[in-house]
Length: 264
Image (tube, rainbow, N blue to C red; front, side):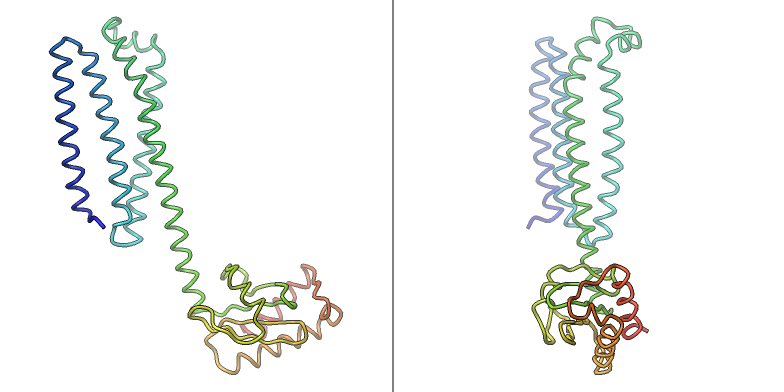
């Protein structure tokens, strides 16, 4: 993998080559007296430089030292891209109205061709910055998901989470917002005994068709509390104990029972 220094060196050499090409074609156009063509080549060159800078920054963002530096770099680039898009849109609106431009410049014949080139090239600049902004939003969301995933794993390792099933039917989770791992839920549904999930120990207790699974680092007392919670649920809802068709209010009461036995 190329380092940031190597990428800078590669893009520097590329820029030197492009500058040489620009000087060559522009000088030739000026020698022939075609100043408008020279101006057009300059605009194209600026657009290429903008695109290459976006590509270069996209390559070095993942090479920052840490997540914090990556987010800071993304936010700086997003703000800059929004400002540049806004300016270019404003410029395009002004350039698209020849009457305003001619009134401001008072150079009717000479400015007409330059404005034509600017109007032609500016949308490409906007497209480049728009694509760049879209990429930054995508990368930011990607790293946000990574951070959330890391935080979720941390919560799983340090916190206690309870899952309640009736057979293989998922009923509820306490605390509800602690983790949302569909793969883990499926694993619990097919296990009727304690099992390992990655680095985690998952305790499983059953009472009839009712199954309570708890991710915890606790000792034997935890299992006693799990059995007590299952018995309390059975006593509170004897009819629903068999079919497991709990309504929302009953699920809330079940969550309170689980909290009382496992979290208080």
